[in-house]
Length: 346
Ligand SMILES: [Zn+2]
Ligand SMILES: [Zn+2]
Image (cartoon, rainbow, N blue to C red; front, side):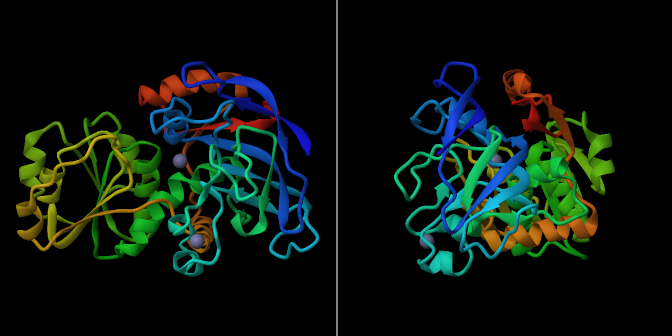
């Protein structure tokens, strides 16, 4: 065991505080990573505050990890000391079920192991990336290609793959009209990725406050959803809508924006069930679907795609002692577009 510095949540109601945690010894298939940057995802806040169920504390969040390999186990073949690597939302899965075999480890039939707050296969509780080091089995460590800086790469491990996967699956590309609902951490990556894939991209945001940003990030058009005229004007327009908003929205009125055979894919997870008017689906052979992060092979594909297209997240790098303040700013939507912790300050 090695003791390393970290920032942890002591309970659902207290601020995060500096602490130390234990990392396991490097096993034959393990990689020790010196974490350089860790992104702050909205899920971190929901999890540490117990919004998604009870947690075991102290809890170190963080599932957007970018760093350098500093030690490898005797049987490791995928990575070498000095490699630039990333870890996303999961650190293990059964490896044997049908979904794992297909490279869809996030849908492991026995349950994937989350990067933090999950019981690992050795019985310990996982601790995340707000920390100086982490030990992860090599199969859940991806390579960050040269050409993407580690700080802008970190958010790709959750925000990037969460939007890349449905864009690919539902065929975003030349000749396709894609709308992105919400221009936050996920939405800004959806815009960049869909635009790089060659799609015609529209942002649907509550107001026009971030319009300039949206267009700069690659959107072709930008509409305010607070304006009822938007829904009339855009009816039947889109092949694909990616909904990144985790608050409840009126799904049926967004479904009306889809063309024949269009799909609305939810990547956010509102706490309450979303009512859907079936007429909005059957009237245009439309689909309402969901998608959760992406598998390890697809995460690597996404990173390679980002390197090829010169894409990274828009970030604000912060020292560790600004984490609590950053949480408040994320909750107030006052971030453009991802906070990334410089772990040297831990
Ligand atoms: Zn996340
Ligand atoms: Zn499995």
